[in-house]
Image (cartoon, rainbow, N blue to C red; front, side, top):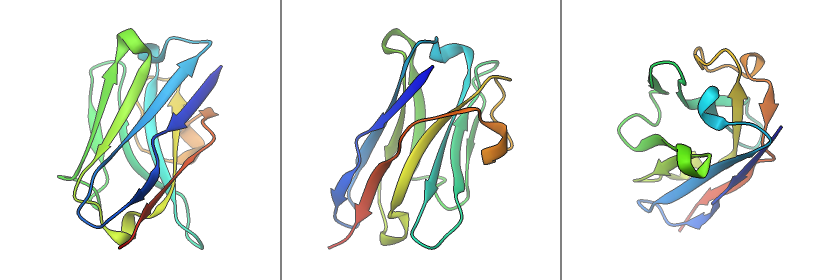
Length: 124
């Protein structure tokens, strides 16, 4: 079971990035997938999740209206589209899988397998 997060980079405030979480060794659609982020000196924060049972989606208040999580089952990949990025979105972003399929609450202890993280830097 392996998750690979990618798509991070340097972007100016107001810009957009799309993160990808690709799975190998298991079928991603059988799991809830969560996105987390950790900024320097801060605790890891649950950003978004998507359920495998009913497609239920969660967003943290800090990203609601700007981020969109989605699945492409044919590609065994989950995406996090990030728009209107702010400097406070700067962090290492991780994807993780939850075998219960529900994904909420979006807390680290709920998720069993983790990708390696991808760095997002929002700066002018």
